[in-house]
Image (cartoon, rainbow, N blue to C red):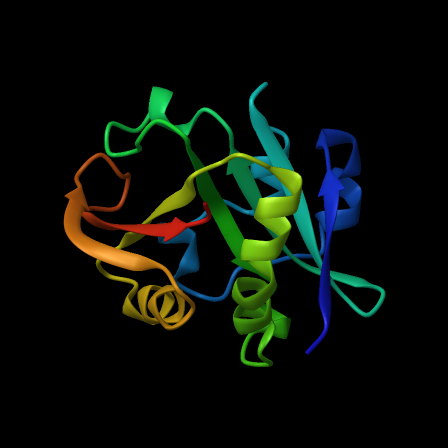
Length: 157
């Protein structure tokens, strides 16, 4: 599956309004259209594009350590990753994680790595991350809205 990434801002929200979450995912992630409207000054919105259709969304937080004590200096945070429910199961998530390291290295040069947290109740997502180069050092984050989360890291340097 070929995918690409598109920078998006709050003004692009109508282009992402069709993305919905699969049942149960609302416990782990915010709807892309809502999260896009909440972007901070040091957050970048990125749409996932397959063919000519936006099929997903995520945020890169360039100041993740300021709000997440587990983040290390020099790490960017991957947040709010969502793939449209109708597009799940087609290899898009895998394609995102195969393309993500190169995109991050190009778009965020000099960054040592990326970090994310994934809820313990979301083993499917955790397994996807681990199969695609993210590393689990056994650390848990207890500040999430839906319970404990695994902290995973992706070295980029």
